[in-house]
Length: 211
Image 1 (tube, one colour):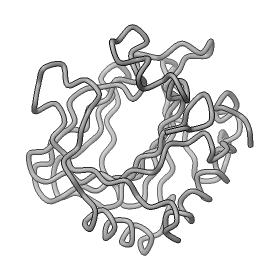
Image 2: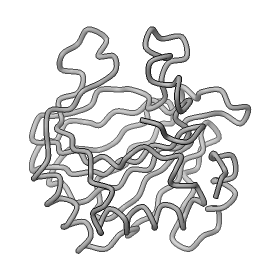
Image 3: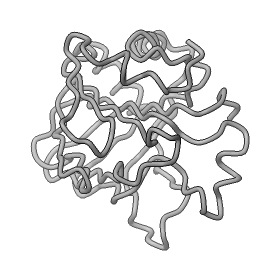
Image 4: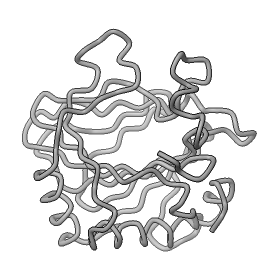
């Protein structure tokens, strides 16, 4: 369980219900029905209680770059513990390498413009965000509900788009085989056109998470 992410792809390939997305540009997978409806509902309720305006390390001077709401889910909550156990069983990643699980809520018109989950190694804030725990490695994201219209996640460089689907897990490696960051993982949380979108996000690091 001490693996920092190098063998995740090998571990999950062939697991029941896990599909590798056909592209040579990135390691990206999806698993429909990864969590049941009752767990989705419990996590949505937690997001509704604790949500606040989302922030971003670098908005590129655009105050509308990320317009969703966010919450940090309590790690002592039984539903969060159940989710952590599912992530660990699937990926083999030690939870100690993971950031706290976040929930996000997108109302009509809200989005997260094209971005990467890794921190730009040449960016001004790289040291601030990566000095203690290193770079982000894998992203795990779960759609908690179906959305009436909009809200897809688009990977432009991969020519792939994923629609919100209750309980579906989407996960990808933010790095290339040699450990460098992978710009092909640029993705866009597209505007919700009708309804509300809820997602869960879990990021892992190169080193033990130290906040």
